[in-house]
Image (cartoon, rainbow, N blue to C red; front, side):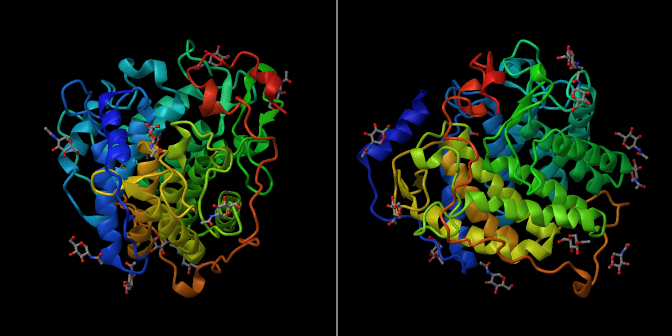
Length: 458
Ligand SMILES: *[C@@H]1O[C@H](CO)[C@@H](O)[C@H](O)[C@H]1NC(C)=O
Ligand SMILES: *[C@@H]1O[C@H](CO)[C@@H](O)[C@H](O)[C@H]1NC(C)=O
Ligand SMILES: *[C@@H]1O[C@H](CO)[C@@H](O)[C@H](O)[C@H]1NC(C)=O
Ligand SMILES: *[C@@H]1O[C@H](CO)[C@@H](O)[C@H](O)[C@H]1NC(C)=O
Ligand SMILES: *[C@@H]1O[C@H](CO)[C@@H](O)[C@H](O)[C@H]1NC(C)=O
Ligand SMILES: *[C@@H]1O[C@H](CO)[C@@H](O)[C@H](O)[C@H]1NC(C)=O
Ligand SMILES: *[C@@H]1O[C@H](CO)[C@@H](O)[C@H](O)[C@H]1NC(C)=O
Ligand SMILES: *[C@@H]1O[C@H](CO)[C@@H](O)[C@H](O)[C@H]1NC(C)=O
Ligand SMILES: *[C@@H]1O[C@H](CO)[C@@H](O)[C@H](O)[C@H]1NC(C)=O
Ligand SMILES: *[C@@H]1O[C@H](CO)[C@@H](O)[C@H](O)[C@H]1NC(C)=O
Ligand SMILES: *[C@@H]1O[C@H](CO)[C@@H](O)[C@H](O)[C@H]1NC(C)=O
């Protein structure tokens, strides 16, 4: 464990604070105050610009490269929602430092921990930078959306029909464990990036690919008829069975892609149905107990406190993508708002520790701090609270100047989506027993433990 993390932990031990972050979910100023504290908490863990650090990266170990991409995505969202420019310089420096010589977020230094999904968490930042009008990177780097396009071309090249009729593998470096695994987050990221590039550029090629990826994911059984998204499948068995673990970020990554396509295609029924269906599928990740209505939790590991460093960050991405989906699909806004307001309140109550009382625990339904801290916990709290500003302000993502997004009259919008199931019932989302070591980001990632994975699939 690196020193900065150690310091953070010692705040926990020696400078306990009694009150949590104050949050009134109906007050813009209160939300702004809370997000400022939470963003600062994310940056307190960053050591990339200090001696011994690497620009752009939170300390590894424990944080794999992808999570730094995820964390800058949270900071990008924070800047966009609050207009607080305090971290813009440090963010620009970070996003440029990790670009790689082909300007696609594929760098040789990080090859050992770069799969298609890892790369994608940086590409999302480039896409957001384009959509939010973040200043362009300094020459010779191209514009942000060109960087996203470069990575998209990588994915097209890596789309692999040798087995399983298509799909992206998890890893693209053959020496990394996971080269034969085809997972939902990699394919979902390719899908979402295709959708966002379609909307941003107006180029039909990206729509065609988004449809192709969706069809493969659905056809191979990684998505159920009720839009549950399963972890992945293995080309060694020609993808004839899937690992059924469900993670928050998987449903989120498809949700924002579907909502973006619904928006771009002027609410064609198929993308509206998929958007509302995916939103309904997020129900599995809310209301862990009857006393915790509408609180977001990582169902596959959280109740056992068994989430790993990667998994503790996933709630951040679901919250982010639910809110950004509601911006482009206003008919889901009420339902998303209900879920995220309750969750944000819970998250704020979990942040009581550290020098500024802004260090967050992991669980949002215990009305207090559980002393399980880290970048993922901090980022999740930041993103769920920031999402309240995103929902309320609803600034449409930008496009190239020659692209027009249809804005149908309110009367022509799809019917507002309400709760689709009894949201006070205890969630029991897993179709499989709790993880026993088979969960992807838990123990298989970089651990060389994929040998025999096929036997774990059902
Ligand atoms: C949301 O917007 C409304 C109308 O502009 C405003 O009155 C309200 O204070 C805002 N709420 C938040 C939480 O920003
Ligand atoms: C926000 O923070 C400022 C500065 O600390 C404080 O004066 C103000 O009362 C806070 N507002 C709310 C609504 O919490
Ligand atoms: C390093 O980053 C932190 C966190 O964003 C920031 O507060 C600090 O000013 C930066 N330091 C330098 C030397 O850039
Ligand atoms: C496609 O998958 C096959 C089988 O795993 C592998 O040998 C090949 O290198 C892959 N092609 C690409 C472009 O990754
Ligand atoms: C492998 O799976 C693909 C997709 O389901 C299927 O089209 C193909 O026929 C399968 N190949 C074999 C040899 O079973
Ligand atoms: C919009 O302009 C870009 C160049 O800025 C061009 O590449 C693209 O083809 C144009 N798209 C449409 C839909 O006209
Ligand atoms: C659309 O995007 C594809 C893939 O990047 C590209 O090959 C093609 O030239 C683009 N078409 C236009 C009109 O810009
Ligand atoms: C697309 O999203 C924008 C931004 O919220 C919205 O104004 C517009 O009405 C949406 N268009 C459709 C077709 O939903
Ligand atoms: C809610 O219920 C769960 C399970 O019974 C319990 O562990 C938890 O402490 C309760 N939370 C509160 C705030 O009472
Ligand atoms: C909090 O967790 C840290 C790190 O695991 C541990 O060293 C410390 O003793 C814990 N503090 C309390 C009050 O349990
Ligand atoms: C979008 O759909 C609405 C409602 O069906 C319709 O009134 C409008 O003309 C469409 N806009 C475009 C650009 O197709």
